[in-house]
Image 1 (cartoon, one colour):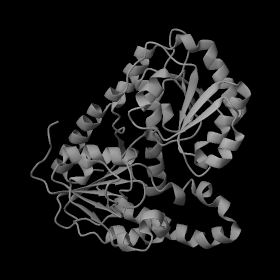
Image 2 (spheres, helix red, strand yellow; image 1 turned 135 degrees about the vertical axis):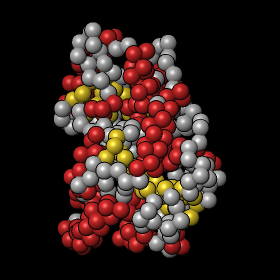
Image 3 (cartoon, one colour; image 1 turned 90 degrees about the vertical axis):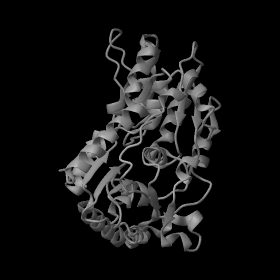
Length: 379
């Protein structure tokens, strides 16, 4: 991999470094592109992220020293804006924030270029705030609303500090337009397609990989497969796990989080991936397609950009969509899938997934940086 713009002094700003999820995998690629870059994050807990990231100089905010920060760092949300603004970035030529919370609000040198790779505007203060706070009771909701109002005001105002927004999907691009009144370039996140492989045969199970959070709709999938009686394997854990396990019949298996080395075989052996939630991009549907397996998904969000819908035998695409987040709609989709299952072509599905490969991300991001540094201010 060619490293770009070695002469630049670069800062990478990330919300927090507490584990390796999709955002940290993007940061990892950027670390390879900018091996001399310094990293700034609200929190950094050593040993929980990859060596590629940890070999950089990492500076955490003052919140790192607060009581119980490691277990309850999200509780300090009202202080996040102040903490992200406390970083001193006046000596950098290029600032790249990777942001789903407040990282894009960092204050940089006005002569510097600030590219914000925005995974999403903060879900919990905008369109999904009821998903996060509706179960708190009316008194707690009343108390939290002034904080959310402050955060929304800050979030919109601080978006003006960004030179150019980059984002993960057209779905999020529309959200950025709505909340920040800014446009964005879409560069799909990097997927390591080479990790995944085709299988000569498939198993008898459907697969779901998800955190057990309310908006993921794991419970809807469980209810649907209880009625279908088909084997469903679920990878994941989360806050609703106890409730969901109580709903599940004997045909449903819970694997917890599995090692990354096990995932390729699970993908390659499944009949299809079940994806009933709404994601801004959705890494898992792309990964399963890289293994040549189709997707059965609720037709909203990032999957509309990553999955090609089934039309007919001559145009099987890479999956099927259903139109309502209900067990009944998912049941109908699975039954439809089983009628046309043999029409799907693993090699063509994998070829489609290669559109989202890491090499493409690197090429597009390098071009974006080069253009930004030449023109200094874009859009």
